Amino acid sequence: MKTIGILGGMSWESTKEYYRLINELTRDHFGGLKSAKMIVYSFDFEEIARMQTEARWEEAGELLAKTAIDLEHAGAEIMLIATNTMHKLADYVERAISGRFLHIADATADKVKELGVNTVGLLGTRYTMQQDFYRQRLESKHGLTVLTPDSQAMDRVNELIFAELCQGVVKDSSVFEFKEIIAALGEDGAGALLLACTELPMLVRQDLQNKPYILDTMQLHAEAAFKLAIAEIS
Image (cartoon, rainbow, N blue to C red; front, top):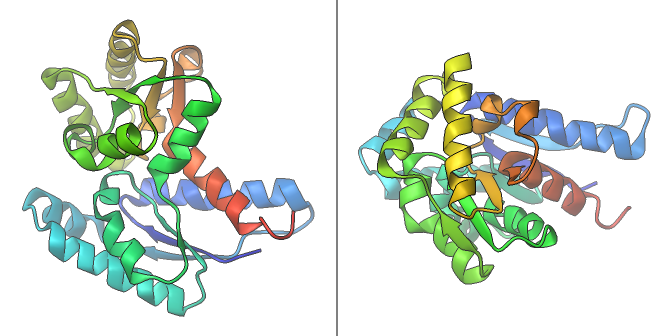
């Protein structure tokens, strides 16, 4: 099994889920005491969030690239950024390493197309919903139509992520609000809703598991990484 490198800590709430999901997939596939080979670097999210707020994207990109190189030198053969938003800087990481970089939007789009869906709702941080780096990849590379919430709902989703979910807080009132935002996108024509922030699955409960499809980009990313890691031995 190949070694997976994870650029994590953005936030650690989602990074621990990557670690759990990939190890569970490994255990279920092989049985026994088998677990995944992973090297995880956990950034101080406060520092990363400050770079985002201050638009110091180049500095953040160089930091991710340097860390990815360190992970590769330590033995990582497949590289993941364990957050949707920081895929804005995916090119920095992909250029820096010689091994395989697995983009979260590609793993997500593969599942969308498998479901036969053409129009998706995109939910994440304001950076992810407003800027082109995620939407454009889904539209240009994968031919999908992408919808986003209105400005007020966009602000609220962004607030929920940073003020609550990244701190491990899940309120019943926030679950209800999020359900309403999902419903509005479904009414606008989204056949699938992309939880394109790795903390958003914390808000999704069983009563939302119906059409429009609710897709956890973190889970799809972890599954794709696992399949790639075992590709030569399955």
